[in-house]
Amino acid sequence: VYATARQQADQLVKAGQFEQAVAVAEGFLRQYPESGICARGMAVLVEGILSRNLTEPAKRHEVYQRAYGEFEAATDYYCLGAVGLIREYLWGQGGVERDAKKAADMAKEVIDKLGDRLSRDYYLGYNLYMQRTIALRYAEGGEAALAFARESALACPSMLSNKDFLRAICGKITGAKPASCAKIPEDIEVAAIILTDKRCKFCQTAGLEANLKSRFFPKLKTKTLDYGDPEGKALGGVV
Image (cartoon, rainbow, N blue to C red; front, side, top):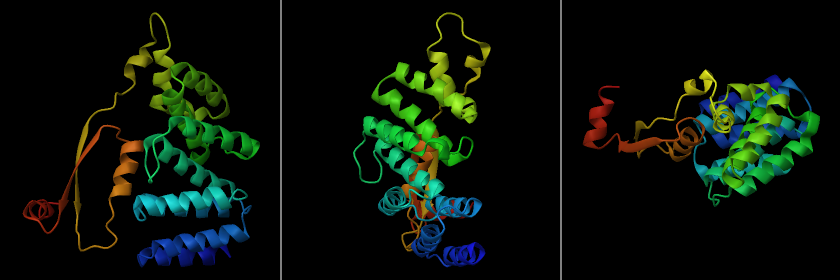
């Protein structure tokens, strides 16, 4: 059943029918929410569609809201929806106002609700810990973030490789700091050009830009060019 549904969803993605592909994944998850690696595979499929294809913020918000509101039994997909909504509150995306406290409270609610069902190493579960740590930094300050970060590191050792977590710890050390604190890379300003084409009905770049900025390059500066304009054509000729 999973192989058939996955093949159908993959074919829809190739055809550019991204919302229909998500619908196929959700149809499988409604029938088999506790199917282990198969349910996780469908969650990963949708995450890929959201990251690469279905990038319009409003459409992404609809998927996150549905996953969070209707798929609690499918743990990975539920986490995917929760993390998406938490990021929206944290960074003011998806048509919602920026609200770090709401992001932190929502992350706590989901973590407490899932308990032992929450994966400790898989990235969906990991994001819940990290997103709450980041939200607490903005909502309640460094002490609250550090306290939760310490707790999270025990539950989710992957936190120890995250630079935001390490910065929080190093920032609270008084006196001489370990040499490793000086090796944490600082966020740098990254300039990027988004080359798009207004004739392309699938070329929605706002969601991708927001995703890059919130997850990878906080100081990202972008300039958008259309392939039909002289500057866009000049760039298109060299890439």
